[in-house]
Length: 348
Image 1 (cartoon, rainbow, N blue to C red):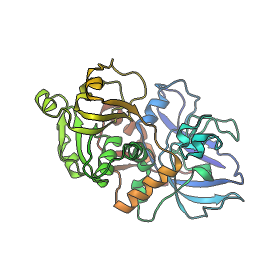
Image 2: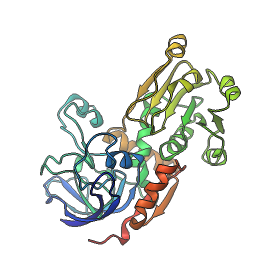
Image 3: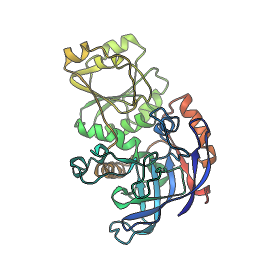
Image 4: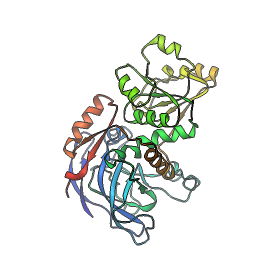
């Protein structure tokens, strides 16, 4: 299938239109016309080589909403015209214990990421959602409810599942005290989901400049991490803290905020952190953990949860020609919303 996307030709090139071909439809494949694609901070890290060398040209994007335009002969659950989504992975071995446990993100043989991976069928680099079309095996396609606004649903496929999975894993429920470090693309979804689960949610940020935005989506307010008195008063006041900061930072600022048996879950930064001071961990039986997106079953669950509770990410809709401008803004700050690309003007 001939199509077009916005690709980086190198880590420093910026993104520009790139014509390429998707693989031929296999028996278990679903062909999708992409309507909307979210921009994730991971896109910047990957293209810039922060997580390792990449094969270029590379089309990022793993928050994908679209319509089915064709299906393979053995596809059972999708038909032409269905509203569907594709998230952060498009394949896994499907045979290991983690895949059988519906946690394909931890596949023993390695998941295939939506972009920057190797396509099993062709051996070519997987190309992501900043494009007009995508072909994905049925097992990695997700159903999107009519209750969701398609223009705002894309970030649920990464920002949503990345925060939903740890909230579920650590059994967040009514009365759980949750802190969310950072009110960006990930953080604002963490707040919305935790509030819908009944939690008491506080945003933790270096300043209170986003306090009105935090309260508008259900948080009690903002705890300023640079206010020493406020941080001292907040010690031992959280059961769970989601750390959504996407760059190197210091755990030690936040671990005293956890109550006994509390957990700080890292979902933002992949890479080095400042040296950890262990006393707050040992003397409070506190812990630091990590969490990677979620499996396909759980991703479907968060889509359905958002549909049921009327949860949509805060989105700024842009045209493809504005992608590089949006990337610049993400590098300069951490806006409390997701940029979402409207693909209708992108033509092969």
